[in-house]
Image (cartoon, rainbow, N blue to C red; front, side, top):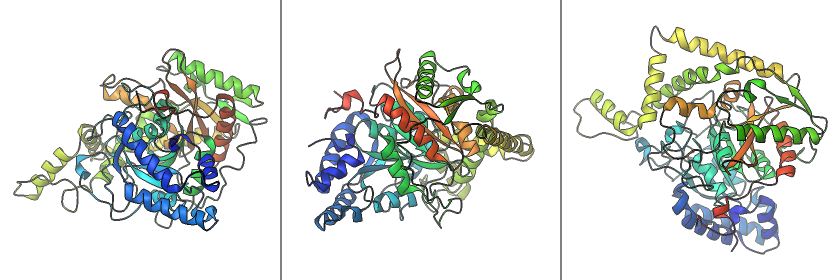
Length: 496
């Protein structure tokens, strides 16, 4: 049986329509693939076999009635979800001991929409603890390995989501992105990875890190698969007041090419310290190919983008401190035994339940929101946010989309970056988009000449015009090809 995770949505549905295989067989083969390949990758924290077979049965019933479309636009597609997304009856741990035993009593809107669209849910995926990290090394349950090189990180915090697609275990996965947590692992693992404009996808049922920054989006191996997933995800949700009534068909302009489009290049990005020569060379190459395809390349300035990381590491920890206050060991979460007073129970439970990086960000947020410090840092960070948003608005008066590096380097080895500040710089190209709220995505453009590892171009769209970046991505896909399964996992292999 073929590895269905290496097939596109169209290929799977064509096979189902032609009765070359059943949705039950898709589920069986996909679960078997996870069981074998994930021994090497460790992308999954929980496998949802019963849910997968139930979803497959619904698809097979629709096929038997002669109406596959009734099963939904993602009918028969193997999918999986980052473990900060609630799915009723499954553990939602956020890769933390704090929530190790927590079982979801309800389902997140984004998860429900994918399952209602016919997706076959394979399970929950590893991540950096509470999404705090850029390498998936902070997971309390062990790191995920990059399928392209098992000695290297997959990126983070949605490392499990990226690795599952890169290893051919799922056709599509969902991740969340607060400062680059979809796009950076997409770049490291060589997958299409989309962070939509803030408000396009409901955040209801997704455990919050930074409520004004978080956004859910898909990983896939083709641009069309990502766009089809966005069609299922997008739209107003009464349970999330920040969600918007988006009715765009994200597949509508994928075949239009880039002729006549104005694509921006930002000198502040291309000349930044830390950008490795092999990444810069590939981005320059992609820019040249877009120009050859008929796009007009326009230089645009983002004069305040250098302050994005500083602003983010004020705003993010402040919001994280507020959001994680709910994990108090009383209603749910880890409860440290043996304490005689509530204060001691709080202190012991939070000290042992949270990992090192989570504690670091909680303490930083607590300090930044304290009396005498709040005015000095939080207000200026919000002012910087306004300036960066204005910079992007001005840039989009000149261009339809911006191209930039997605990460300053290719995937690094486990333990190679131990300094937290250096780790934070992994997201130097992605953070400003979360601050402004625009859409951004990773598009694989081959491998580096030195490392042989995937490199991605980041495409950044104006707010609520995410179809622009998908159109450019589709043009690049025609040049570079669809994102492959990692070589060690291609053709049915499991990382030998």
